[in-house]
Structure formats: C-alpha cells, structure tokens
Length: 239
Image 1 (tube, rainbow, N blue to C red):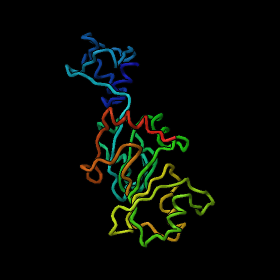
Image 2: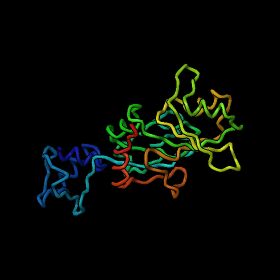
Image 3: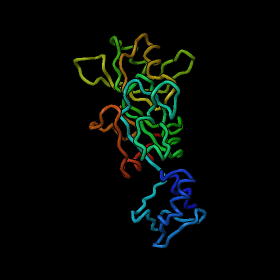
Image 4: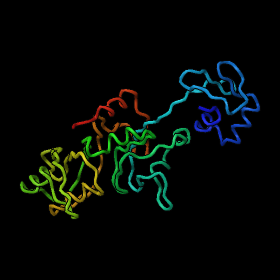
C-alpha cells in the first residue's frame, strides 16, 4: 500500500496534508525517514511511526452500537441523524456502514463495519443468521396467531416469512416477547404482527447470531467488538 494512502485512510489528513507531513520528515518506516508518498509499505509487517508515535493500522473495524430512537440506519441523510453521525472521528475515518437496518423508531443492537464480506455473511438469507427482537405488542396473541407466526405468516405483499420462534419473557405480561427470525425484510417484524391483526408498540433488537447487545451500552453509545466476538459472527451460520 502506498504510504500516503495509508496515512490518509487513517485520518492523518487529505493527500495534500499528508504530503506536507512527509516533507516535514514526520514519518519513519523501520526507523528510516520516508518523504515520498509513493513509497509502498506493508502495515502488517513494517514498523511505522509518526513523529515518534507508533502507527497501528487495521483494515477493518467492527462496532456494536445501542441504536437510539429517532436515528436512521444509514451512512448519510439530508434531514435525519444517522448511526454514523454518532461515531467518534477516530472510528468514522474507517467509513463503517450499518449491517442490515433498524427502523427509525426501533432501538437496540446495530452492527457497523467496513467489512463487506462479513456484512454479507450476516444479511444473506442463505446464511440464515438469527436475529432476536424484544417486541412489545398492543394486545394478546391467540393460539392461531402464534401458530401462524411460528410457521410463516403472509405479509401484505404476498411474501411468506420463514418460520420464527416466539418466547414470552415473563408469564405476567404476555404482550412482551422475544421473536427470533433469520431474515430481514423491510419493516418485517411490524408487518408480521400486523398480518395477524396486532400492532408493535416498541421494538428492540437484542441479539445478532451468537452476540447479545452489551447491557452496559447506553442508547447512542457503542464499542468495538473483540477478536473473539468477530470470529463468532463469522461462524454464525444456522444453515
């Protein structure tokens, strides 16, 4: 990789700003001063320093966010705040994007990454990666409603959903339950309950594959995934 591109990707400025930094002799590669931005480096093997500070390069970033209400699952928007707008500059420079989507008023686990292969792994219907939602509905389900939702419900456009899992969280309140699905059609959860004459009052995604939303994350906050957590997502295939 060209050293000027590496530094630009890591947030050290535009190509013009990086060129100025190089002219100042601020970059060393394996203890050798580099002033030519066209020089190629291997960020995984070479020791790179900027004005004496070691540069740790990573090609991908993986973030777990507790998405708040009122924020949309997009990288940019002309009117609404996006999940990317909530990122610190040091993370935003990697240009992560939301994996899948949550409605504007839906909260919970949003994964952001710049790793397109993992994003495909988690969103492809063929991979059948489970997502668990905490759903609050406005009225009780009867046995027929439960059966239809579990076996596959016909949505308003004629699409028949894949089998889902329903589990009431407590016996005291049968209007709050966990719904597990392995696909992600537009507004799917809301449309599934609408198809059986019900309405979703509140919706929160709590789990993607094997990973649960970190309970320490306040709405709007996020953290990087550990290597083990990333590896577990790569293995998240219920096929």
